Length: 238
Picture 1 (cartoon, rainbow, N blue to C red):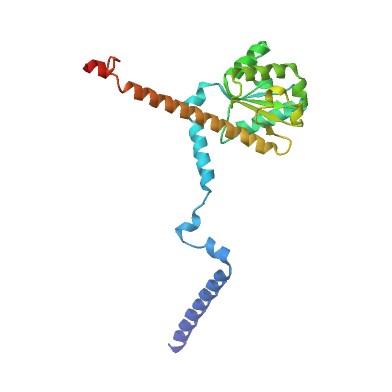
Picture 2 (cartoon, rainbow, N blue to C red):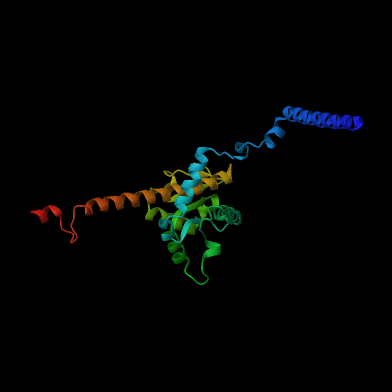
């Protein structure tokens, strides 16, 4: 009986010693302690308010009905030079990837065989929210690129719908029609330039929504003074 009681005390002392050693080890390793903590806040993931705000704005703008009134989000204009085609393909792949999944027009992929080039291009320009012009030395020398550039400028001069993307070209070599536009330089950081195209589209769609809401509010305000037949209530009362 006495021997059994001593074994019980020894077992409890060993267990207590192991628990104390484990607690001491965790206290010396704050990372392990944080990972094994049962506090509810230890599993939370925080993001900056600015990033969250832009993501919400982006989703709201991309889901708006005004966006789907045009067939394409971005019309990409570039020369037929091999390196320009590669750059345009990389741009479109970036824009069409998740989560934005933009709709882009790329002439070597989206034109119909047998169709008139000028007709196909002009329809694509009119059915696009933004026009991204890949300005390169080959672009400046390409007659079709200059034709499309003039079409885009004529439809919306000094508008935010045209985005010059400059690569391997100095500002002095850019077409004079685009010298008063802000441009994106792809020579240094292409991915950053591609991201700016997405942000420009989101900002453009937000402006469309804002203008639509203001127009709707203005119409509601003007109609509030009319009766069911559309006549002014003041005249009706008189």
